[in-house]
Image (cartoon, rainbow, N blue to C red; front, side, top):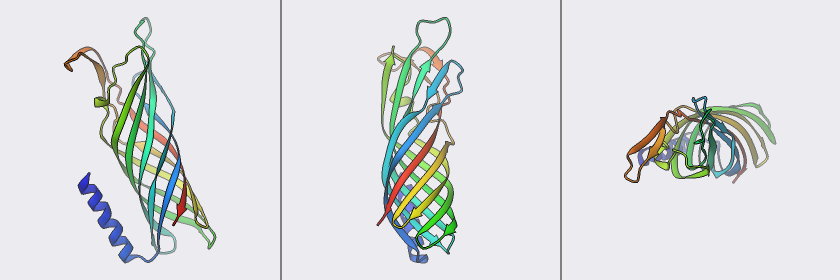
Length: 213
């Protein structure tokens, strides 16, 4: 994580020194995430969350720009085991706090003095900084140790700038499994039951309101 942060800092400094068009701002917004699973017996649903942080924008001419960001996101999902002919169906709510760092390349479809309309895409790395597992009904197999601590995503979206305000709508696709598998364990951490191969990827809608400073 330290190496990635250093690389991001070097990128920002280099871009700022090379290109004259530079904006810095703060952002806050709403996100709806869903940890989808490959098991037919496990259902999942969207979970509402929020995020806040900062963004940098470097112009590469009049139309193209690079926008690295860093923000904290509260996200998660609800897992429910609906296996037939069993009384041991469980339901768990997974809540995760992450430090998200996307690096986007954007293109301005409309570039006027007061307003512009943009499209953007790019990769994002996400570090899990905290997590909480709540048993809604019965005790489920998922624990915080089952959550992958470093995850990769791809973001695509569109945005509008009006004076100092920015509004972005994006969709991000999980490139790896945030939760691979889970199983019940005893007090010593030894497996005691059936393993659930969840292969859960986290996909999310992200809506952000930003303020250029």
